[in-house]
Image (cartoon, rainbow, N blue to C red; front, side, top):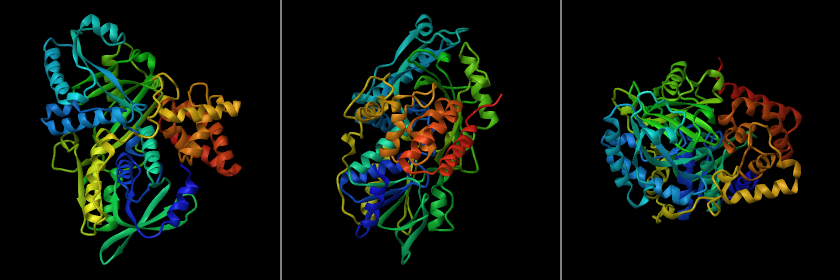
Length: 519
């Protein structure tokens, strides 16, 4: 992906696009892939960076939703399990099976959870991963040596999917471009174009240059996640909110807290939440919370009560109690739950919702990463009817995601790049100084930064350290120290002067401070 080339394609495009998509998270990017692979002309704009919001702040799981079985939402579980299977098949370089262990501290918990997980296995059918099974106390201790053993009776193990959310977003953007779409980050929607009350396009502004573009389109899709209501009011000032945001917080700990290759899943904490401890990129992610919030932000911050909840429960189930100084990073994401009259956000819909305004604006919200492909198929089916652009068959069921041609060993530091890893290694071979790491505590190499900038539309230091690599989440303090080196590499590629480079580094370091737990 080359930004100048994509902008050139945008300005030279004659006539209206078939579909314009606003929002570069999982839903918007999935819709761009679906529409472009059907043969439609597509443009996508994102005000910040791809997956900047909710889509880079998940628990890193591709799951069917075990807890939704308890709620009786079998249809959602079936859909998610099917999509999990398709994603494992279509993006094998980014998605893999991970064992999850549910410990039993009461005699009845093993059979109770075991029966539910057998149902879960059955619903997955041919797209299942591995069957669940009971574990003895001895099995549990061998599998999870740092699990609290007092009162431990045994447990159950089942398998779900794990992935790197922001990396999948980048690979979806590249997949869309490979099929002819134009995907532009750091380009905000500053207005909707109308004729006789019907939307005919989008006014877009490049956040780097301030240049504005009028993008005509037969259909416009609002896929802006927790911000969909802001865009709906751009269309209709009287539009009522349809999203009730819920905040989920995660803490990142060193791998010593949970060695091995298995995750811990606690189905029900004191307040009814689900708790995960998940190994990921050589670290351990503890999460999550479910806190209703009134205001949306691109940079939500963990609340003290959420941090205390996670620290307390991590200490309850791990032999080593984490301290604030152990936390390498903390991050918060906002879920775009569909509003309803309910007692808590846990009761709000996790299904996706599509609304069509009188103006023709299509809004899609809700859902989760696991079902992004199905959401995209659904919204593009709507767009074909509303935009009158012709009905074409969806092909994403079997569409391989960019990079999937090569699957490297899971412990290969370049595994998430798939077939792109070879080009990164070539860069390091041609320029030996690029083979070095940007910081001793991070796996990120200089060659990767160059690759991100040249081929993955990385335009800021934050784009590289937060999303092209996951340095911000893996070790926020180390990423701050690495920022000057990353800034210098990007400056040479993008032509930044000294003032711009210093501003980029300072801006990132200020952002990263919010990911560090003081104490």
